[in-house]
Length: 210
Ligand code: AMP
Image (cartoon, rainbow, N blue to C red; front, side, top):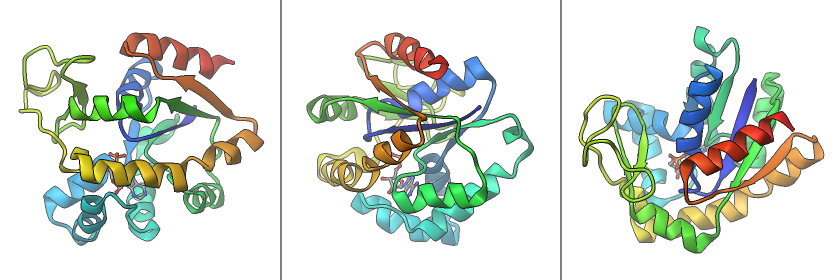
């Protein structure tokens, strides 16, 4: 199963990707997490990416595609994967097609912009494993610490209101048109994000069957 999760920043893609990964036994490929790891490691790709991420814009395709191709070549992707955060534009969707990656399902997680703002202000992430939490809707077992590795959780720089507004704009302008692209291919399913993570997961799983 090769899946794509579409959705605005804060719509819950990362959280749902983790749930699906566990249920289906396939890895999550998050370009955002891989770019943040590259920044933390201080690689050339990371240095380029940082400038764009800080401004809430998209990192150039050549950088993201190189990182993605490398990751997809790993053995654990042979039975499928969940793409979280890629493609983010028509040109990136075309890259996947050119690579011969046949996507089975695209789930668009839909949450109104006003709700997104609330969600992002409570979002916390683990820089080590990429897990995401929400202080109210999806809190970690122990306050401020990741369930997987006990690392302190942080607020992402680009979740600050100024940057987040720009990211939302980029989503509507460049990423949302992908819905039509995948609708035409007959593989798009829309899921309305609920307050409870488990309610959304149930809908996402249903959407994978239908
Ligand atoms: P995310 O964690 O998916 O919200 O991504 C955080 C940031 O990383 C985005 O705001 C972009 O700046 C960058 N990014 C992640 N994925 C992509 C992508 N597929 N193409 C371009 N930039 C990306």
